Image 1 (cartoon, rainbow, N blue to C red):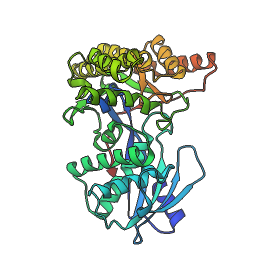
Image 2: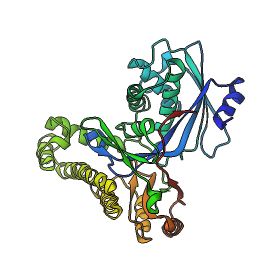
Image 3: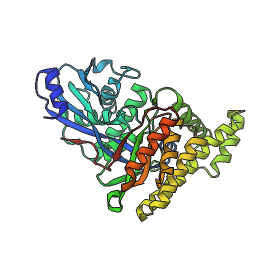
Image 4: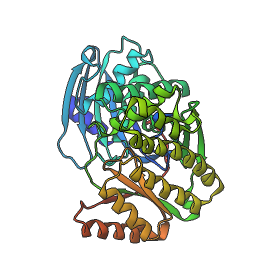
Length: 393
């Protein structure tokens, strides 16, 4: 019996009908462009959120959750009829919000009878590894397969959009959908190239073991939140510029200059800020397209350089890094990493480094020493393995 099933039986007094698991993710490159018609290259982690679930008959959802490193179980209960934008405004919003959104868009029948859910996760919280999407996707897939039946590719695509709605509308984090897509569509041994211009995907082989390389995830333990306004302010500029120019930035010739001209009328005084924000988006899309070809060709030296350039753009133009992330990246590169960059939304969370397998421990030590020298929080580490998306256990 898994930890989630054990928690379910302990709290609810009976066996769950099934258990589902959905992974967190790292994004290799393509940051802050998913909401701008861009290209991203994430892969699913082996670390997952597990949801043991059973149907109810009264339209209510009972949840119990035990998160990484915690002994205390958190409990919550709500009627599905009460779920909606901004409610519940706590951790349960990710879970019940995904069910509500699936019902709202018609993926789940409106007579869904409610459910009991026990959640256990080994995706580090607040590390920028998308513990939120892992939670949403495990519950959304479980609710659908409990009440309707096995979810095919088309249903998974619908559930992706439901989980995005849950995070945007119920929780209030204006994320772009990368996390939910890789959590439901990941494939072992592959990264997923996601092109938001045409909503297409391509599985890209990513067998780093075969070339004695690894992706080292560095959780800086810096505070991390995407619901505090910083993420939304960056996205707000890109959304406004795109609307003002009549298309996504990717489709606008000379988008940087066009955006500056627009800002002179729409946001006078902020032209240079708009220039830098748009420049990041435009160059990151170009970098990611190039990096995908580098990964296909097995040119990891070039891929590493693309990672380095991505971090510099996120630091200087998009201004979403913090000292903990910059310190980790610089220390990893000084220790011989082929490439390193922040991953996720930024403002804390994690960095990743592309390292030779025999240099993992030396890289960890270099990052630890750099953090200690600057009086920063002690980082934590994991080696990321490209893994499968959400499944029924």
